[in-house]
Image 1: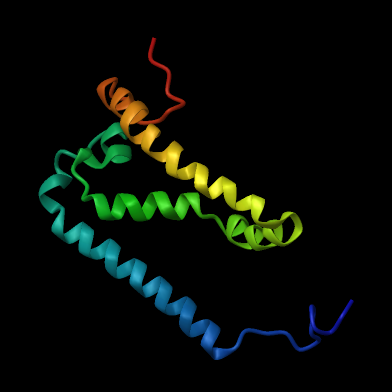
Image 2 (image 1 turned 180 degrees about the vertical axis):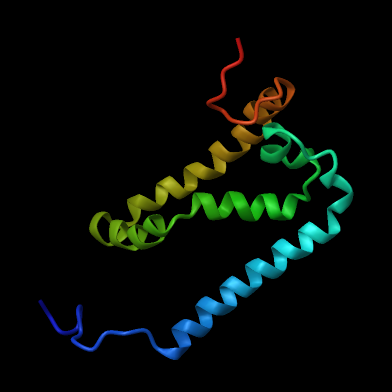
Length: 126
């Protein structure tokens, strides 16, 4: 193997530890802030549905961040440039399809799931 890919003296630099520590600290602060500000909802937060849906009382911004982070995985971020390089800009047509598909999901499917009180598209109520 090449020394460039697997250097003999590979180890984490202090900057790596700093970034990782800041990431953990930010997550802890956000979690603590949410826990402190939502103490009034803690008494009624019982059951799985309440936990999954957050009482349907969550601001759209954290929901949007959660959806983006679950949609944009590390594999997607790494593979997109490679796919574009291998197959050209035709891979970009998939991105254009999002402009059609996402509004259809938002205006056609989500209202149905909301009215049926489904917490997942895979949930089956008989």
